[in-house]
Length: 196
Image (tube, rainbow, N blue to C red; front, side, top):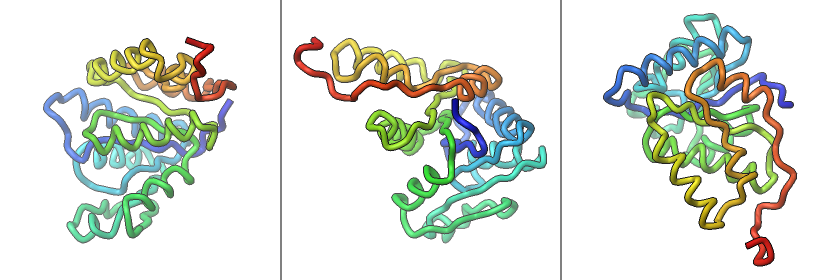
C-alpha cells in the first residue's frame, strides 16, 4: 500500500457553476492537511485551485505549487504558499508535480485537468510508477466520463484491471481511504487477439 506523504490535486482554474464544486474542493484541501499530507498542485490562486490551496493552508498544511512562468506573468501565482516552483513549460510543470507526489486526485475541471489525470494514469498503466490516480466525483460531475471509460473497456481498448486503477469516490473520506488501500495491478497493458 502506498505511503501518502504528498498528494497532487488537479482541478479547474475556474470554479464552475455549482457551489458543491467549491465546497468539496475546500473539504479536500482541509482533509489533506489534517491528515498530515502535503498538497501539491498547479500553484495558481484562482478557481478551485485557489480554494483547495487556501483550505489546506488554513488548516496549517504544507502546500507546494508548480507554475509556469507564463502564468506567473499573468499574476495567477498564489502568494501564500509554503513553496512555489516556477518552471518554463507545462511539460516541466506536470513532470515536477508527478515527481513530487505519491498520488493524484482530479476534482472538476476542464480539458487541462482531464489531460493531467489521464497522463499520470497512463504512466501507471505502463508501469512507470505505482502511485494511485483518482477522481473525486463531485455532484455527479464525472458520471459521463466514468460511463465512457466503461465503454472503452467494453470495446476492448482497455483491460478492466486498468480501468479499475482509476479510483472513483463521491466523498473525501472514502477517497482518501481508497488511496491508502490502493494496490496497482500486475497485468500488462496490451490486449492480445487471443484475449478477445
